[in-house]
Length: 214
Image (tube, rainbow, N blue to C red):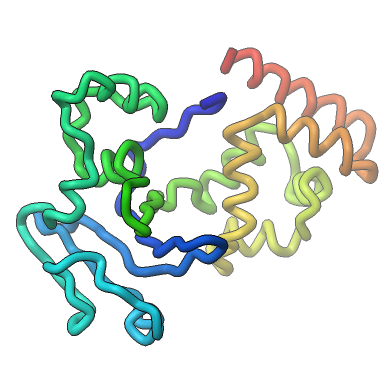
């Protein structure tokens, strides 16, 4: 993998039924207060071609909880005795000593012999506060920040003041904050309305950040 994700921020697993060219949301697995909780999507329960995730998770109920990981999920995690186990872990940048079952399912257990596939559910780690920090670290006003990344100034102000969730905007900015090369590329290509001195300053700061990461 040419990038590294911090899987310690995974808080659950989304389950999908994948067949040929379709992928249908099935439900999600989380761990809360020492309990494993699986919840079927209401739409999936009404899906004509729905099949149960496992015998212990019948479609007659929507919500299940247990102190131990449900066997069908446990079966998806490769055995540590497998000689290839360290290699599986290396592919996702996790330690072979990792014990968190949710993290293991979101990485080395995400695909298996069944039609069900797992995807990580990430903690909402990039917040309105992080947006403001990102902007201020670049030394930009809300106006210039908006010009840099093609977002309206009003949207930036509302998110920073917690008057709008801005989920998609925060996802976009999370990527640019994590990959300063992408932020610099975006500014070089699309921020033509930015003052030349401001552009020079912000690109210099991004290049410093790129240097710190290398």
